[in-house]
Length: 477
Ligand code: B12
Ligand code: SF4
Image (cartoon, rainbow, N blue to C red; front, side, top):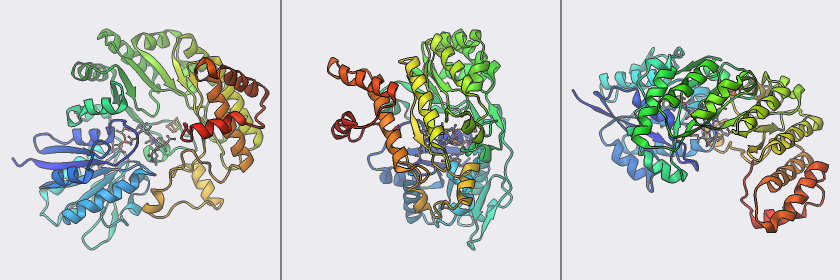
């Protein structure tokens, strides 16, 4: 039987999380029929040369695309592939093509876009491409659920969506498709990324997940996770496992069962995952202790706002008290916490921003192991808040080129006045200075920063001017 080569491309970026999306779609292809080659531009000195080598004789190219910066390299790589092999079908999947499946097809180098969960859709696309006549292939995608495509005459077709499949029916992720040790080197630690669920049952109004996965959630069974994690540890000897699930603590009995699976195998690892404040509140002391014993070292709990009114407006469906209860619980168990906040929601009052900074202060002071990054609201597409902003006159990018410049990490949207921006930036600086361990020389500056935070006194920020001058690239959060 001919084995077709399928090339998967991860665009350039400045972070080194394993390309789990490509691992997922690549692993689900039948290895008897397909040879999967993953080209991760983050690992290549010359990504074009690596892509050119891989594309020779390939059946198709798949590219994973997040909204923002990665789009530019995704377009560049797709055009490069088309220049070399004009007849080669180029398939885009991931969050941006899930939100803008038809619009992405305005780019001539993209033939097909996949929406939401990609494994089964991509396998069907590859099967159809492998069965079709060369050069005639893209027309064969009529009726293939979960994708949109451009036919040979240039017309765009959107096929019906595909139902979310139970992850336990999909093939296990084949990490041998990746040079895992290279990622360890780049991360500077033996940390393995792993995903155990897809989708999310909640409805936060700033998030695209409810739109893309329609508030559905699917997760791997604990027994399968125990087996996979055990085997992965035997092969890759990682020290830390990073769960990339949207909300890992969704089903608490599953979380406890996975912890038991890890303990049963006596894996010498730590792990980190995401938790909602309501889930932390419901989690029993015994279950948390079990997680801790199995290696839980850190949870990320999205707080978003310190104002209950704003929390309700963004439909986070948590209570401020639940944040504090969860924080106190994890502190008692010696677990680290990251509590991200978002300020600058459209129409957000000064009082609401103050309430967020106050809660961030309170959490930060609870434990040296707590971090409280503060981000500005970004109207990422696919969320009700973004739709409201657009109705209110906010103009979203229209082309892929504009979308590729849509990362406003570190900058604020139009809903933050210059005064508010100044206040938040000063607050972030003094929080960092106050709680980051330093040398004896910086002790007076740290004491002054704590005093400033207690008094909310951020005028004449001389320390910040010096800090910005010395470390112009300091962390943006
Ligand atoms: C790890 C992660 C990161 C990492 C690295 C991202 C990376 N490229 O690897 C870091 C920390 C750097 C990061 C940064 C950011 N992230 Co992030 N991140 C994630 C996270 C937690 C996991 C991604 C993952 O590996 N998923 C596992 C895989 C299996 O799922 P998947 O990506 O959805 O892939 C499936 C389908 O999409 C599809 N598919 C995907 N690619 C392809 C390709 C082909 C060819 C096919 C056929 C199918 C296909 O099939 C896959 C299997 O079903 C997701 C949430 C999540 N759980 O997905 C958020 C998420 C992707 N991040 C998001 C955001 C908003 C950000 C940030 C802007 C900052 C922030 N405040 O969080 C930045 C900047 C991103 C950027 N523009 O560069 C959003 C994306 C929104 C969007 N429109 O793109 C998500 C969805 C979180 C959310 N709910 O809002 N992120
Ligand atoms: S922010 Fe988190 S909890 Fe809320 S809908 Fe998105 S993924 Fe779910």
